[in-house]
Amino acid sequence: MVPEHSQILVIGGGPAGSSVATLLSKHGFNVTLLEKEIFPRYHIGESLLPSALKIFDLLGVREKVENYGFVKKEGAYVKWGKDNWTVDFNALGENKTYSFQVRRAEFDHLLLDHSSSVGVNVVQGIIVEKVKFTNERATSLIWQNSKDSSKKGEISFDYLIDASGRSGIIATKHNKDRKIHEDFQNVAAWGYWENVDVPDNFPKGAIATTATSKGWFWSIPVKERTMSIGIVLHKDEFKRNSLELKEFYMKRIKEDSFTGEITKNGTFCGEVKVEQDYSYSAKDFCGPGYFICGDAACFIDPLLSSGVHLGMFSALMCAASLTSILKGEATEAEGMSYYQKCYKKAYLRMMVFVSSFYNQYEGMESQFWKAKKMINSNIDQHDIKYAFTSLIAGLEDLNDVESKVDNVVYQEMLKKVKQKTENAKIFANTQENKESDTVVSDPDGGFFAQKIEGYFAFDKEEAIEGFYISTEGGVQLSRV
Image (cartoon, rainbow, N blue to C red):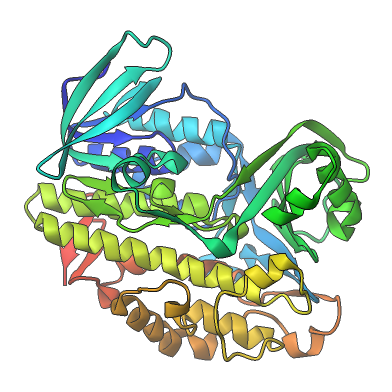
């Protein structure tokens, strides 16, 4: 039931919305979450990064996820240009880590049910029609039941958290400040395959990311011998195509050396799904009376599986900021400034990595790869090892990614250069193997995956606005 008032109101029950609701409810705050769908519901974005484990622990949901039966992800395989390599998370020794390949309908449902179990008032089947503002501050919203339009009402709140996903209610309907990234005008088409032949030398549950002359493929094992396989192309590739979508998708898969080989004995199931115009960012991630989390604020690209990571990480940052505001340990201005800059930093960090990753594909002059060359780099394009080390550490000029970047972001990136460059190793024997198709291993066992995720928010030495996140007694901000 939708109450007339809630101390904190969350829109959206995806990973960002359920995570921030859970973290705030664990502090004892009154939290209501409105979700337009009835879970479980389908969603793409099935490959999680190892960063999820820490957040699972903070949510108190780790055991439920571990026991559910999702595919355990112990590494990755990348075929990019002339280079092939594997990432084996098990090579980390004492710091061994892993993640999961999840069926999002079930994963998201698990997280939402967990929110209910810790006291969040979850109401599904509710459409948010409009957020109302009083003196430029978000104060209430108008809602309607998705199955019975006669059931409607208004709910007021002290704070609103917009985790409404791509619809982005605040960004698209109120602020109208969402910007589509012109350099990422891609289309993703995907479907599901059974009885796929996974190479024996792959790390267990590994995602495969393989580039082609026109774009790239993902191959994600979501069940035993069942894979989510998608292709990402520039939208003009689809415009020039005269084939039906499924025929076009199947043709591209057969033409690709890797995906064609692993699916040759497989069976395609169901329909081909499509997404486009999915790379964007709002100008502001918070404002008077509200925060924007997850995909409602920004999304970069399916490359490197950043979606759920940024969604749950933003939920963590939001919960810490709002907790400290409500407890009087930070002013609203301080908490919101911290959240804005911290989230921007995480987002830009991933943007730099994704952009630079695209920029390393050698020798391809198709429109897809030209469009990805966003960053003016002085790095020799043929020295992939140094390029990857540099972009992970933050050596690229972030001002080439966005027209305005807070100086604190750049300075923090430069710190990473000093701290990490000496011991950063991405490929084994890259110079010897760069002209061959030899598969090489990452001797640091997933170094690049760890560094792009980077939990800088917990590090006192990397405090933003004089704050960092403390997890003692629940997530909240601590002053340096």
